[in-house]
Length: 152
Image 1: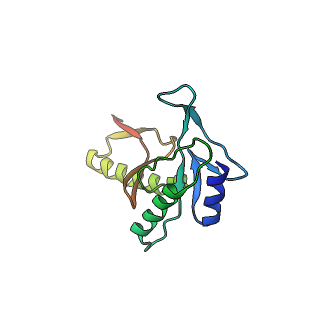
Image 2: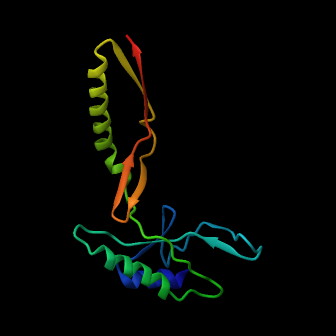
Image 3: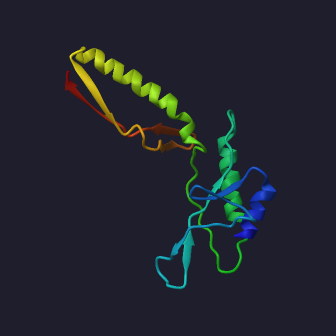
């Protein structure tokens, strides 16, 4: 793992993550689980990340990520299996107030439809923001909230 982390560090913008935790040569923390077929094997899910700037050449960045994994020289019996390339969000919680404002705007419209004879009960606004990948360069952020209308 240290060799892979050092190789990523030498590339500059490439970062390794295991879940939400950054991996580095000085911090090789991985969530390891038993392998699916042999008792003497383990596996870990490693995300290879790099920033996506506006106007970036996505096919070129995709090739760089795939090349990093396929050209990596792991130690021992380690095998690397490249996965799919997609977008992730570093700090989805930074969008919480923007999402809450959109929810409030939506609920205001619903309130106008049902008139002043009803009041809202909201639930779920305290949950973590969810991120759903739509494509290589597009994600959807949402709060899985619920509301109900009751007569006043």
